[in-house]
Image (cartoon, rainbow, N blue to C red; front, side, top):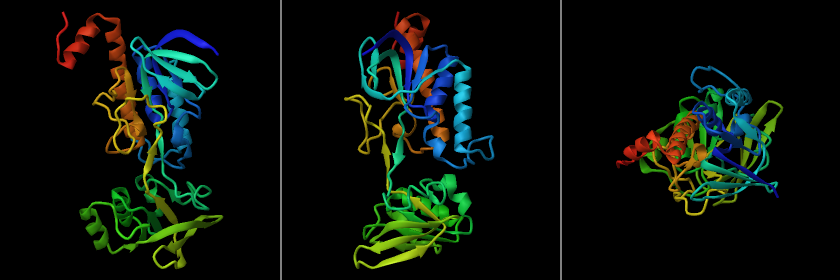
Length: 328
């Protein structure tokens, strides 16, 4: 077992858009920073075929944007360590990060950018057709289904909202929900029911997603009330049955909401001093690449101020003044 004696100013855990943006701003603030990620820089962006809502770029692949962000971060000298973090232990003097090879690293501040993932149906054809007709984001991919037929799976607010969004683009939207009533708000339910392009199928689940060389071509369904099995022809399947944040590394005692998202203040700081959460791990209204990047910017600058406050001096005064008190 090895132990890194150096105490970093900042350790970023997770290399998605939030973590990479945090790395850019941390290095610009001259923080001694390392980013740790077990996978490729960019995270889930690497699995996105086309991104068309990144400001200033009409169209770019997720892999291309991931590479561009990583190159931007490393151009400032950001160290990226490809290891898996197994545990985080908060402390008064510094925070401890344990890696899968036994190494222990220390830092004055941490940014948690572990992200999360949409909940999957777990049916045949779902994984194989991801990016080829199966999607978990209507805003990201809805454009590709203009004047086509799509299936939306889910019964909460997100499923209802995304069905309404897709109805503006697609010719036909089938909305499938496994229960006999929706969980989403009544206003949304009324809007869905009033939308002529949306056909609602309750008590219905997807058993398989059918495809050919061109992508998705339909879904096999089952009515749970009658047991009837059938198939729906469609060009795409949008799944909105929830999102699972990767909170496995979040230290005990960190405040989270009922859905497992970390709650923070407006600086992205958790209830543990010096530990910040960004991106899909953080409780917020919109989960997009751009909001993750914004979180990374905010958290890195807040971490820089926190680190300076630990060192004392004028920054300490400014930090305490912003907190609502004066230090003489």
